[in-house]
Length: 290
Image (cartoon, rainbow, N blue to C red; front, side):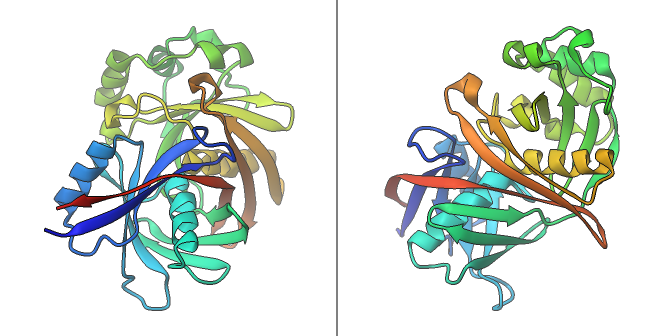
């Protein structure tokens, strides 16, 4: 049997037991994908990461990300938290870390102690709109509470797909996932399946308040979704016609796990790019024998 160390951190917060928890296995050599998936399900966090040697020695690591039921090509808070853990253990050197992932190369900047900012690996991709009535049913809200002035519910990605939905301010707190409606919507739309992850948001002045539901992939609600927030930042820039934007977002308040995220988006040669940053705090460390 071999002993594998793991560390947990709360991401996008400076307060323990806030933000989004993450488990990191900083040396996953010897673990196969089936075992990684079983460990992620056992941890029961929205994601768990497994760090491996990079394919390219110029990069920091290869990082595999698993939610409770499947491997993910990219995700936000797992990258922020993994960079924090590796830096804290002395396994990630320098101010910039490069993680190889399914969706591409992820750059992570360690800008100050406990704070990381990542660039999403892909430019904004818009996949298509979804019916207001179906999305309202998934969120258990009146369709009239779905705001469509700026955009309809839209499938979008900067490395991981989400359905982005603007709601009226009062609807954010009362929304709740209806898993039956999620299943009906997923079955009705080609290529959705378990990737029906709905990121709903309301404007708060120049900033954003948000929630994210993905019950079909085992996450009833996520306290902080860096990849979805980055996707929204890219979408908002595409809509306002500017060259760049920056703002703050709050997520997880309704769960009692307030998360604070910093977002940026800019126009690049290959499209609209986005980044997300935030603080981390360590929580648990332990080992498992396999």
